[in-house]
Image 1 (cartoon, one colour):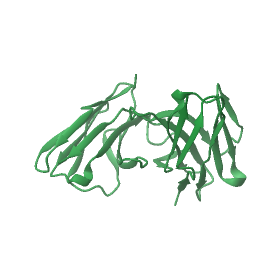
Image 2 (tube, rainbow over the protein chains, first blue to last red; image 1 turned 60 degrees about the vertical axis):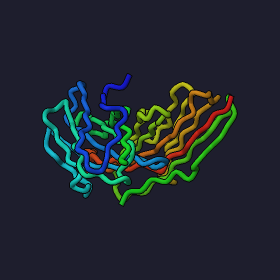
Image 3 (cartoon, rainbow over the protein chains, first blue to last red; image 1 turned 30 degrees about the vertical axis):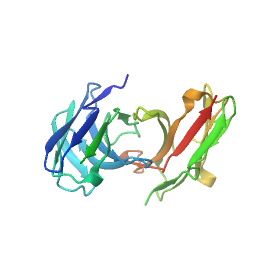
Image 4 (cartoon, rainbow over the protein chains, first blue to last red; image 1 turned 180 degrees about the vertical axis):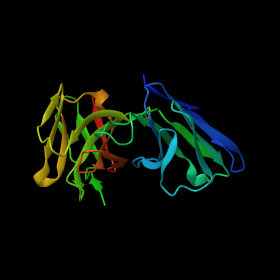
Length: 115
Length: 119
């Protein structure tokens, strides 16, 4: 079983909807990440949180809004998405963003379809 | 800028065959970390191995082995006696670091290799 839990597993939303993706980890990790993965493509980094502060935003459109309420929880708020935003959204965590190249622990992802 | 290339888009083998997945990387840093991840159909990325740039020792873990060669900027992955459960997408990834070995926190993935093992 994965130690990073993502909900929901599947989400279908219209372009005018507002929804949120949730990610939770209880490994004591202080870095959390959002990745976007289109079909047959590698994951692409969206956001990095370090000690609950946003440290990296890879020029993601503002219709994606991340939030890190505490060290265990990471949300991704979605609003006015486009069909091309349909993808697998992966959450990951690591002990910290620096450090000696600690591997990322990934969740199972949320498969998002925008209609 | 860092770059990871996995030239093999898809590989198909029959069970019990050995298979090698190639990975070539580019980086201007002298300190970096290399990873292999497995992504089964369920979607989760499963960490397999990490190597730092100063450790060229090859590693074997059960049926898995990794060959790291800085001279050719390659970090290849071999599965011996493949099994149907090995069917997945495999990603090679690179994380650059400063001279002290502290990672910058950004992981660059290759395009992935789809491995299908037939019974």
